[in-house]
Amino acid sequence: MSKRTDVIRSLFTATPDAAPERKSAPASSGHDERVPALGGDGLSSDNQDAGPVRKASGPVQAIRSTFADIEQENRALRASAEADDRVVTIDAGLIDPSPYPDRFADIDDDAFAQLKQSLADTGQNSPVLLRPHPAVAGRFQTAYGHRRVRALRELGHPVRALIRELSDDDLAAAQGTENAARADLSFIERAVFALRLEAAGRSRAVIRQALAIDKAETSKLIAVASGVPADIIALIGRAPRTGRPRWLMLVEALRLPEALLRVRELASEDHFRSQPSDARFQQVMARAQRTVADAAEQATHRFVLKAASGEQIATVSDAQGQSRILIDRRAHPGFADFVVREIPALFARFADADTQSPGNRKRS
Image (cartoon, rainbow, N blue to C red; front, side, top):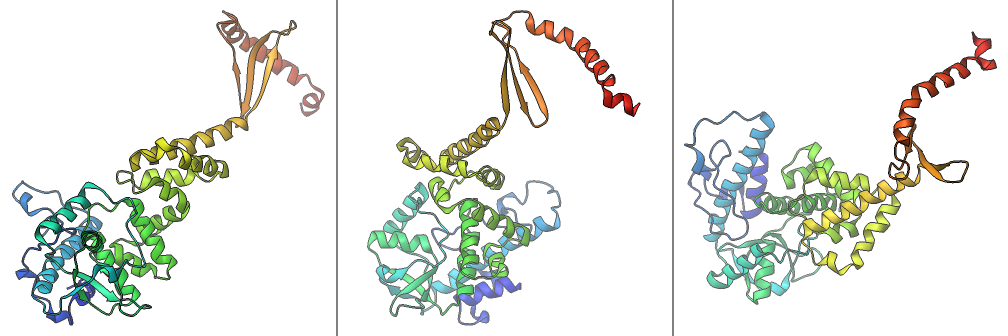
């Protein structure tokens, strides 16, 4: 059994040996941490007869194995908890959230509403995992089952829970196990969770264990969460359909102070707040990128060419080592074609004059 599995098991049971054998673990009846049953190769058991499956690479197999272990372990642990006489009932008002919040505030979605309705109809089938509050006697902190605690509090129901003495590292690991079992935690929520763990002094090893990720992914998550100011992340929200590539693009677009100022102006626009989170991300990105483009355009040197009569005949812009001549064909039909035809002769005159210059004659 893996080290990670032993750690997770120890959080729920008095000793690692107290949990039931994984082969005989019954299916969980929990509400908010369900994942599909996995087969030996990490795929849904409903697809085992779908035909030959291409062999996955080593990292992919490792990820599949990790989630298979988590899913099977969750089933065994919850089954054990159901029969455990150490499950207690606690007033939801005595339970505080984890010091490392992972979810954003805008979680009043359909899934949470369904969870709340299910708890109202059938009650709480699986206990949550709590630890005694390290600073306030008589209170507790949630390690596992955050959404159920919140839903039960809103319903005015007590919470069935297991109480364990957990260190901060153990708490992070338990909370990460809950995250791994959920498919709806967005990229930026995972990134902010990783950054909060690091800011609280948790090691990169603990962060990797909590999120079941490797070193490279850990660095990318923290880079994004630290590269986008917290107030702009809050302005956007969960953005559940926006992944890492787009967030990395936003990090680059927000490097200009002007971009930050213009994006923050969106906070005062009522129509912006009323839009879904992913649409808010798109507007923030568009505002930031437009600021970058405007800054580049302002850095371009422009001047107007005029005829002897004072009439404007062309606009010349210089940027990044290139010159562009813009001629309005509507104002001067045929002039642009004339200039194009004359360019070879003009270049010949330029080359001849250049070779006849005093400096060039000395070099020759």
